Length: 399
Ligand code: GLV
Ligand code: MN
Ligand code: MN
Image: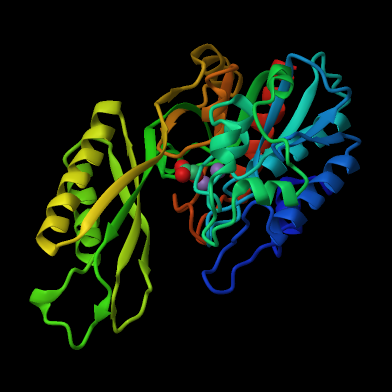
């Protein structure tokens, strides 16, 4: 077995960014773990004879041969959600390295440039904007807006990027112009492949999705001495948002709405908060449903805020329309992979951002629990090897 076996590569990074408090991994853009992963990627790619460049947006590109236009690009990301699993992102990166290694050992000579890419800040876990590296690259977010994003400590993306030697972030037409086709392999974040009894699927669509920040202002006070009638507790409208999100999503086919992050200020057990921020994540099959869910949550928060004497505002932090991956590429790959099943997903990906610019496809690899964004996320060894086989076949087909 080569050192570039996907499971062996995952094992090499298994200790990087472990989170003893939450479990799983916390790897956020430009933190110590993510920087170590970048170094690991550069060394691993160079070990295959690839030439690594980093672009102005901190995305890493490992070229097999000379960088050039009309390239076949594959890869994913190395950052994680807080307390995330080992596979979301890294599986696509290690599978890409393993596939290149296999093709080299088989003597395959690509007729197009081939590159392995690692996109920065895919999860948006530090600066709040998912797929920040690919959005900057494609111009889906302006440098000005990105520069003004702040992490939970108040650090501006502009300052963090400058400190990491990326002062000149922004749309990168040269890097985008080189991509002829992009294929992202990713662990499946659901149970579709378990139900189908198959190890690998080709992606069809990504649900419409977005993030909204709900800010409720009330009045801080004493939990023991303040009569209930005298309170202006911002936690009540925030709680109304949690319930409304579930109710509104349940009323629509294939919709999801989640509040997974809530931040009371100052955050004391015996303190009525003066302010609460809550982040709403909504995904649905149509813009109409997505917007209707958000509108219902906003209406219920406003009503709860009125009853409690609080003020509420809702800010849209990001929005991504439905993605339909290139149907010709999708069908071509599914055929090449022995009539692999075709599956939609509710998860966002850099592939979804690139799909607006270049022919793009995704390969999903079976996850035995279906769980993702949690330490229990997994992929069984057979499925991981089948994923590398699929990526090898894909690169042979396209390059
Ligand atoms: C990224 O994984 C997302 O779907 O939020
Ligand atoms: Mn993810
Ligand atoms: Mn991912």
